[in-house]
Length: 114
Image 1 (cartoon, rainbow, N blue to C red):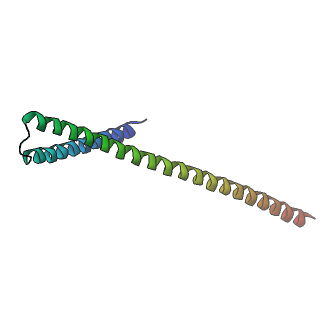
Image 2: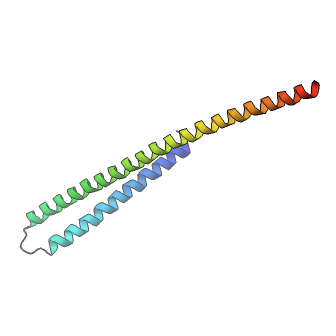
Image 3: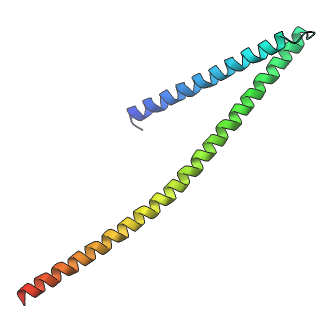
C-alpha cells in the first residue's frame, strides 16, 4: 500500500469515527431529553435507561453497518464475475480476429506471389 492509499484509508477511518461519534452524541441527546421528560424516574433509573439506549443504538448501528458491508460485498462479487465473463469474451473475440487477420494476410501474400 503506497502513501496515497494509506492516506485515503486514514481519512476514511477518521470519517467513520466522526460519524459514529456524531451518531452516539445524537443518541445521547435523545435519551437525555426522554429521561428528562419522564417524571418519577430516579437518577439511577435514568442512568440505566440511558446506558441501555446507547448500547441498543450501538448494536443497531453495527447491524446496519454489517448489512451494508454484506450488500456491497455481494455486489462486488457479482461485478467481478460479470467483468471476468466480459474479459474472457473480449479475449476470445480478439484471438479470433487475430487468427482471421493472419489468415487473410497469408491468403493475400500467397495470391500475390502465385
